[in-house]
Length: 70
Image (cartoon, rainbow, N blue to C red; front, side):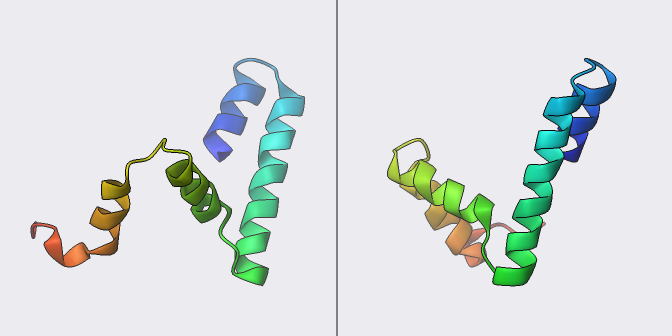
């Protein structure tokens, strides 16, 4: 998100959009650190319910023992 804000501000001169992205980042990180509320987790859950993310993705993430050792 920070990189996207920097690209918008520097490369395209979209300073207002960069400020909005950075504000969203500050709010999301504050919610996580103060209230233990992960915005990314909630968005991922909504995407799964909408059918945008298949259920097998979550099963793979939940069981880390099934991953091959590197």
